[in-house]
Image 1: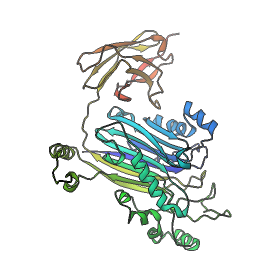
Image 2: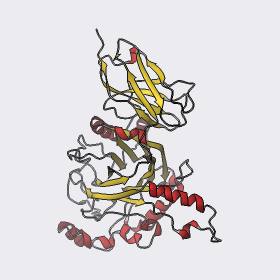
Image 3: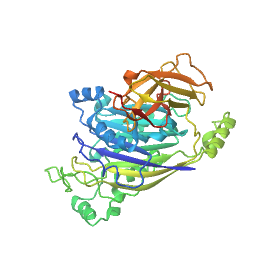
Length: 441
């Protein structure tokens, strides 16, 4: 079994531009860095003109996270945006060839589903063969809409589908993370009692009247999800650039709006597997799947769940969850081995060799990108070359392709090659780092 660190952030940024420094938010001073960062934002500035700009170019929040994490060896593997909702998935580069089957989708629930000011965005993927799904939601606001929030969540679960046989829906995945500005409030208690509990740090006195905790007692869908203890003060609603709760005329009551929950898929029970006649036609197949699950177990535990009070650009404080994902890898070999051969400089054409280590749907649209070490995402290449157009199936043959000398960086530097599969929409092989020699001038 291997253990991976997973770091989840949720933050309603209230249309603010990002701070210059997100090191504390991502706990970058910690000696042990996580393997994966999953960052879910709500209310990213989405004025029509701004939104059109962000479609063509990465938004300012994505830039800040990419610029911060890339020098530390992380790449942005996937992202999805729907108006103010943004979800980013970062991985240490070493794991990238083992992150496959990536799909994203979104569901609108706000303003009759038209504008997308509320709803959910998700990224699902296979991590060393285990299916994970991350769902970032912004649900309906205000105290008296708790049932509507649950209805919206169930609608999102029902509406989001993926183009795959084994995990067509969110709850089919082995692990689901559900987070965001879920907007659940604290009922009954008056403002004075709530603030006294916060000041004295007796948060547990507020838990029974937290709407999500209350709804979990009667809603079967919510009971499938776990959450760590709310041992931090409510994260809404603050005066800007302050640790003071709302002093405006509205004086909103503090609430734990911003949450991170998770679900590990349980093994099917016999009653679920049988059909109405009590006969299970797919029993042999299910039994094989169960044996397969046992052969590749997965465990998830939460190490830390708290807010980051030092950020004041929004009326919400960010919330982080740190998890340990323990699993047995279903595969340890990348699909493609790729290498830079000989000397690389801007004075000569350069040679790349690659070979397919496992069968996969390769295509003439596959390409190999040349990247500076510390690149931000798949699209952050210096140059690329197409693979051999006659290569369509598994072969142990060594293939060769060339990179034109005019496309090799004149200044040199440390580089890597990445093989990108157009059918799988992900990196399936990474070379060892190598040095491009500066051009002789």
